[in-house]
Image (cartoon, rainbow, N blue to C red; front, top):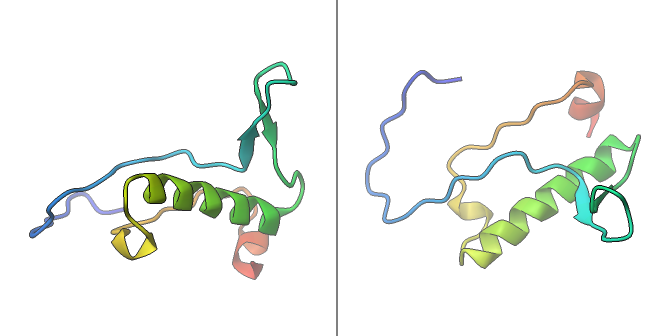
Length: 81
């Protein structure tokens, strides 16, 4: 991670974090369900879809991303996908 970054020329930006492979589900106790349990590729796909949805609502797309950080407990599985 960088200790500091200098960014110039930005007209606007959006910060978000914690995008995981879940969907709303009012039928379950916590109101969310896990998508693709035990399937790292499916979880990564859902997480990226959640990011795309946020960007779309902001009138942006992946070309507007400045940085993207992934946290995983399965590095081999992550790199394979």
